Image (tube, rainbow, N blue to C red; front, side, top):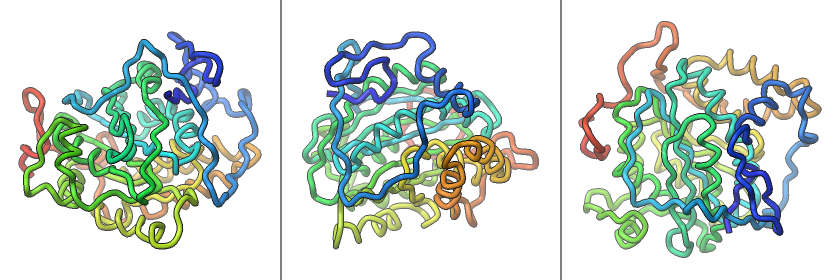
Length: 356
């Protein structure tokens, strides 16, 4: 089963999904985003806290689209690159569904804050590599409406292993070893999850899911995250789903504080409907455009029934982003022109090989 989550026409239990080749959810979402008073899908009610995550829904994957694996190399060719890695295990409840419904807005709106439509997005889904099938799924870089087809291919029903952690460190290792973003000037990566990861990189799991080896100096997950954060703006969007309590819950945020370069890179969010706004807000905060973002957010949200709550949710989530962190936007007046990453190279190159 797979969760197309709004990227195909039908996503019910009984009817196989049919792909929308033209128009699609990308165009619908852009239209609704620009005209919130004209096109309203339903009331945008405030999030409701619950002690347990809601039950998962079943979806049928389109047979013509293979489920992505994580054994391929990728090269980004755009000046601006966004990478979104989403936890799709059971503890996330229906959050992935809500997140994927809103991702069509990402490309269109990010162009505003990056100053260029030379933008590619890479989507990744992950579960627990110790227990799940399809535990690391990596699509390809895409632009605009082709993102519809890319997102409909994911298997969205990983269960997780109940250990109180997943394996996002394998996603980080994949990005470090297999994704060449050296031609990009601005790279932003968000890992969306409600759990911690593992402190050690498991060589058997890396071999199984990524078809790679692990050198001894990269067995420590922190080393991998540290190298990755030097080459891109790396964030964790951390949900509190209520699935964990006690020692397991207490260990989640400290894990990410160890892995990421600063606490400002941990972005709390408990309303998945605000996911795109929060990601755009992190870009705006890092590029000195927070005033522009705030104005646009208010213009979209305040006319709606719960707009004030929605604006407050987003601004609270991004309150610490970029504090004391130098930004390097591509086309912001007065900004420097030093690339975030080393210059273009021929062929696919591991980020480990780039000088830093």
